[in-house]
Image 1 (cartoon, helix red, strand yellow):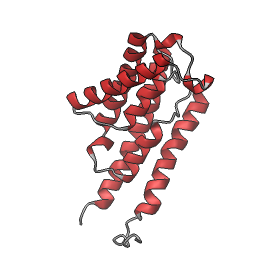
Image 2 (cartoon, one colour):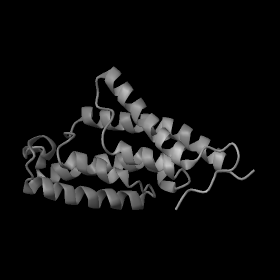
Image 3 (cartoon, helix red, strand yellow):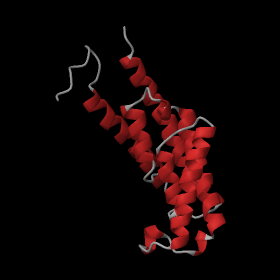
Length: 173
C-alpha cells in the first residue's frame, strides 16, 4: 500500500528514516575510522533503525538505548565468565560454534531481557550486543566496554537530535 502524502513541509518517512539511520551509521563509522576503533558494530544498526523509524517508541529513547546496551554488554561479560566461554574460539572469526558459546549466549540473552525489564530499559538491539560478546566478537575487557559504549553513546546522542527533530515534525500543528 502506498504511503499517504505527508502534511505540507514534512519529509516523508520513506526519505527521513533511511537517511537518518544512514547518517548515524556514517557518523559512527567516520569517528571509528578517525579513532581507529570499531565504534560501528551490528547492534547499532537496529538502534539507528528504532531512532529513525519509530522515534515515538520508548525503546528509541536515550535511557533505553544507553541502559539497554549497557545491560546487554554486562550480561554478555557475566555469561562468558560464568560459562568459561572465553577459552572457546570466537564464533565470528573461527566460524565454529562451541557448547560454551551456546550456553553463554543463552544466559546472556536471558540476563539482558531480565535486566531490561527490571530497569524499564527495554531496547531490543541490546540482545545483539549481548550476542556479540557471548559469541566472542568483543572479548571481555575494559577496552571492549569502552569501545562498545563509546559507539552506543555516539549513536544515542546524534540519534536523539534526529529523533527529537522528527518528533517535532510529526507533532500536530
